[in-house]
Length: 90
Image (cartoon, rainbow, N blue to C red):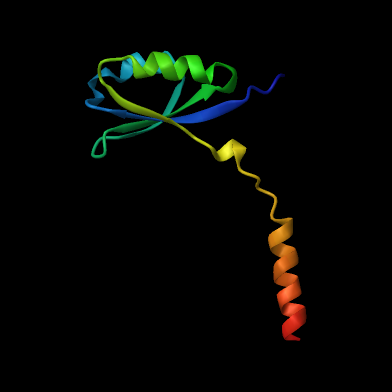
C-alpha cells in the first residue's frame, strides 16, 4: 500500500455554511465555529492548485499552508548543547 504525502491547510472563511464546497478538495478534520476557520489535509502533490482553487471561492477569506513537514524535527544539536552545559557545570 502506497503512503500518500499530505499537508495541512488552514482555511479562514466568512461563513461555515459552505463546508460541503471544501470537502471535495481534501479531508476536513476540524472546524471552529467561533473563530471561523477550517483545518484540512490535502495531497502534497496538488497543494498549489488546490490552494488557488480554494482561494477563489466566494466564502473563503484566506488560505494558509502548514509548514510542519518542512521543519527539521531531529534534536541532535539541542541534546549535544545540553550535554556540554552539564559537563561544564560538573
